[in-house]
Length: 245
Image (cartoon, rainbow, N blue to C red; front, side, top):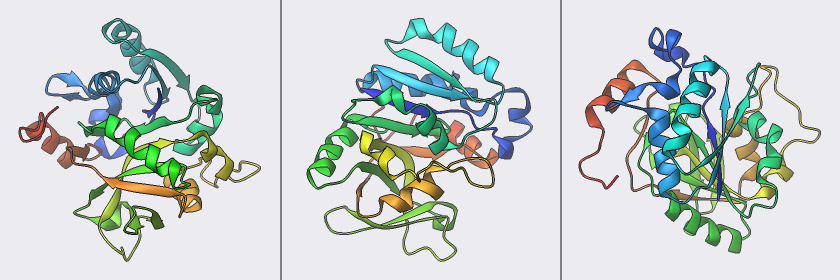
């Protein structure tokens, strides 16, 4: 199984910490966040992972070269001189998952112990029901800051809005997906990047997948470490005592 691990963000909300260290290498319990991710991927049977780099890329790439010997993962690096956005990274590297029935997409700035194997199992049902993407969900304390999904009793996502002003609920995108190669068929053709120069999963792709994607609520720890407050909370909470890691 293969995975995209999106790790190129600048971490602007975490400055000055991220002035000299990329967000994906910030330590959690004495271990870089990216190392936690690589161990999680390996534990759940991922064989190949593509990681994109941009901000302080040399640090990330040096870490990956040194860490390669510690995990049984084939690691491919995709450097972006100019940020492409989450969906832009997928599109540029779509050949990485050619002929893969299912692959993982995850944001490396989330700290989690999610049962990724279970998400792949749920995706099998998604395929049987005509879907092409399975989204991990969580109950957000601040829905307006998240991508919010509406789901029917079968788990089909019937509406999705990125950071809505008036959220319809609190079921939020956890930034972890299992997708099929057919996802690339819903990319705008010809592929056009937004005025910002990027193509974003939440803004540009997920709305096109309404009724063709399914959601499942994570029974796991999940925290975006993107702000100083959230990062500090992660340092205090990890490893979660009530959940298996």
